[in-house]
Length: 224
Image (cartoon, rainbow, N blue to C red; front, side, top):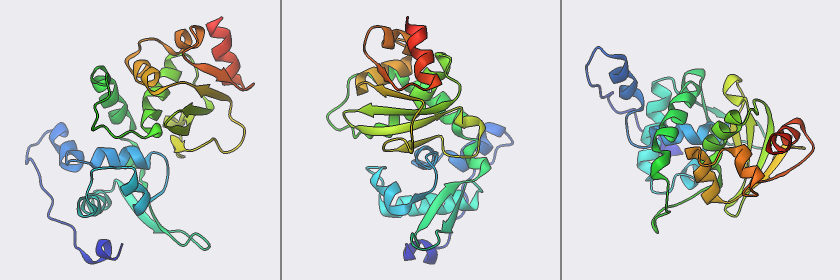
């Protein structure tokens, strides 16, 4: 963390093109930047947590990308009060505005998420954004949804794209969720492709729905 404070930001690199896509890529086109945004959509994160959930990134590159994101107004850094007393990074409104970009990229790349390669790392919460899309397609527009995979648990805030809080979180839901979904990673990947839809996956038993909240009842009723 001290290195983050000592090192000055690197000079901004630019395509030098008067084009909105080029301007956007000036800010987020570097390797790892959008994946850092993906992690920060879960809310404030410590540097060590980011590094743990971005396997393959070096400490120097992560520190550099975070400085760039602060400079470009995508993220901010703050110190938590005691007893936490840790430095955390979080998205600004501008950084949070990248959620639709990440969702579109995920949808575009979903067809490539087929058989897992031996070198592939996986974290349960990496399925959060595809499942948010699947919930919307199933008509679940709001509510707290807990998801249980063999790889771990995470929770989603359906409708979180419209608010200011986290879009998802690692681990079990804080409090009683509106629905609990139990499924496997292959089904998560298939839902990201829309094959099948969430309601169909509930109907054929690939997704087990628990809970008595509105989201759980809506999914069970839609599945018949």
